[in-house]
Image (cartoon, rainbow, N blue to C red; front, top):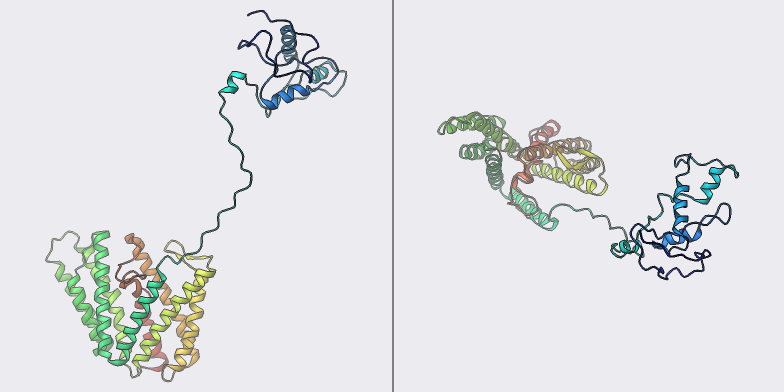
Length: 409
């Protein structure tokens, strides 16, 4: 090692020029730019060393190199422990040595040489002010409400016009809705599950089922249902036997789920006040769905069936029951012959329950198929089946309760 030049013994004070270069030029790598502590007083805390630590640079040596070696030996004083403090006795030699030569704490800035400091990456400046928290996302309906309302109003106008002008036209509307619903259901089954439920016998049998229910009542509907199931079994025999059982099972299920349940709407229409009964059925179902949506969207916090339909809440169910019961009391009092308001309360409660179960049932089917909507025919609604989901299971409930309350008419 090259010989170190002597420096004045009194150097190294706080008033010295710390920016001056060392008389010997740049130090070698094993020479540490650290000012050795002076043993002037008992318990010195080395303020200049702490100041140099903050500025991440050290002043040139102002003590002989031998004194720094003595300081390094003092750091290895026998009996020193970093985990246990020295005794608090002021005259204890270990305590005296600790005050003279304190260990740098782990949180202090480590020593870096000037060469390393030049290549050290600059620290990013801290932001001057706290960034504002992002605004919470607004609730969204998940659909185009404008299109949904427009399509709903248009369908309602067609249904009401056909219902009160010519009953046969309304039967035709039901038959068309049934055929389109069967087409959507069988198409999704084939696309997602490779289940080939025969559409031709289902469509023909479904339309005949609606007409038979209107003409012959419940007996005609059951006979048409049986014949449709038989037609599905025979039609499927014209294809290879692979998958026969699952295809005919899906076909019979589709025949019961869509056209057979729809025949109860046709049977309501056979009464003298048939248009009023069908209108009551439609109003209560729509009001129930609207109440569930409005209350659930605004106040819904507790999930009703998260594994089936995450969007439905218990608060929404309460809204559906409340809205449907009020609408039921008004409809039974002013639309149905010989109806009473308390009957409307029970009718509204039953409609809310059946409509919710019907909606959950189709949600289960769509989850099994891995789809969001059954179709795209109705903007803002999806497909026809997405609008029939709550109507189909509600039709037999309303038909039965009206027969019990006021008779066949």
